[in-house]
Image (cartoon, rainbow, N blue to C red):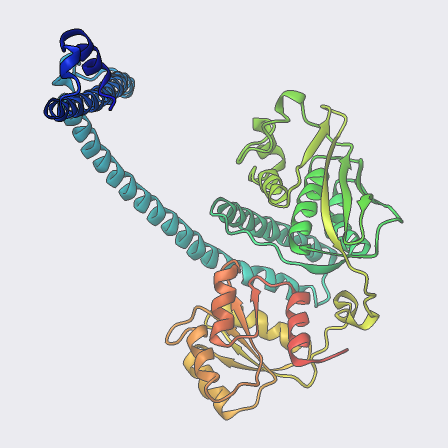
Length: 505
């Protein structure tokens, strides 16, 4: 039988030929051969295991080296980051192994300081929010306190216009009217600016008869223009749609401000309201607005300043022409909130041109003549209406009562909400004009009490505070049907009365 190769060589070399066929010796040689084979297998296994261990050792060594390099680089970058954050810091880093402990200690202190700073920032934010709330409440109170006497002044002026007056009296009345309107405009500008700073400006969508709207702008500024020898012209693009949908109040605020400024800074000249079609789609229309004058103009170096708050082109402007310096700032922000921008072309002594482009939705439905509020209210006749006026300020009561009586309405009076509740319980009224801030019981509470037994009578809130979403929301939640701001325009008052009582002239 064949033996292991090494054993074969040894037999051939050392064992005599006569002994190779010995049976007993053959058993021994076979056993030795198997031992050789077993030893060789063990050797191969051992060598293979050693090879594997060596490769694994090399891999582990390389991994450890790589991890050590990463660790060293990380510590180095961490030191650099700490030094950049605190270049004047007292901590010094060396190259010793213990530096990682110093770094951790330093970071622990920084985290603690950061938490302290974070808490201080939270406290500062809370203080700022409280200050903003206090400012908002202060402005609301001051608005109410200023508007209350203004309501009496403007209302009295309106009532006097119902009576025959001499030319001298009319002139004095006109001076009072202009002065009171200027004061009201100033109050509104301050409140609008405050609301924009707080992000509380909201836009609504109403149908606008654009040409009629522009004629109203012209009419509102006509008297002042004539006093300065100015002519106001409207250049209207016939391609424009008759009706558009947008915020007519904010558009009127922008255009009225620009036109009144043009009139103010122009003497014996022309103010042009130019409106043209920029582009149109199936859903909306872009309209170009331009207010041009032949007035004093604005020097080029001052043109960037006039849109900043409380800023005029020069120090003589406020003294010679008046104004708060807020109008153009408000215009700029109102347009920016509508994704538009106010632009200016002007030259000192040669007039100015303010222009902008606004997007409106198309209004395709024709409005019937009888639904147009401006025509429906030409006759302010409330004959046959029984109205309850709830107001605690005597001057405001006098103004509103005389105005309603001039329109032939029957008027009952209540000095506070509690009296109003009892009057409504015991009488039938077509409409209630409810002041909000009153002693004994305010307008909100009174309305809630009324709604417990009377759901039909329309209740309109009267407020000397500037109407915002909070006031509107609270008014409607209490059960009121609308809001009107004092001092109110007679047309606005009669309009809402006619609307809520379903009266038609």
